[in-house]
Length: 219
Image (cartoon, rainbow, N blue to C red; front, side, top):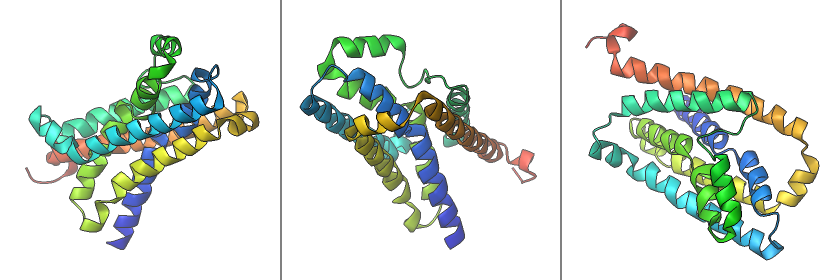
């Protein structure tokens, strides 16, 4: 049981960290706040992290109820989420900014109104995008089927990932001086490969649960 709990904790921490992608969020944060002073940048970092945390925890705890409201099964979400994460991972492998994170139009609009960039596009969909929300709901559902000790793992993983993102945004000037485009692409591709593996595992579990006969089980 302890081994299963540790394995789930590692899965939760790694998947949430990869999907939130603090490095990508930091680099885009730098480009969106380059015309602001130090105080303004820090305010944007605090607000975006706070809003992202509230939204992600909301879906972590109430995601199952929201799915029931719309008549969506957790198996369907797990498979759809796996496909979504697979697409994000592929874009990361090919070093492209994920379309589920932020479009060029959103980035332009954000630059036009600096007062709102903490909410859109930084908090949503850059930090807390569809991939992060789906991952949180799926992982929380799996935690509910384990021991009580597994329940705090997902919200702690979500909070930890956003805390790291906030720390990196606060120290963005130092980080960007040490990370070049080549290093950034290498890190992004590595994280993309890990995300693809997690996505495939999500799909496999979803199919096994939805179609037990395919796994040799009884209906």
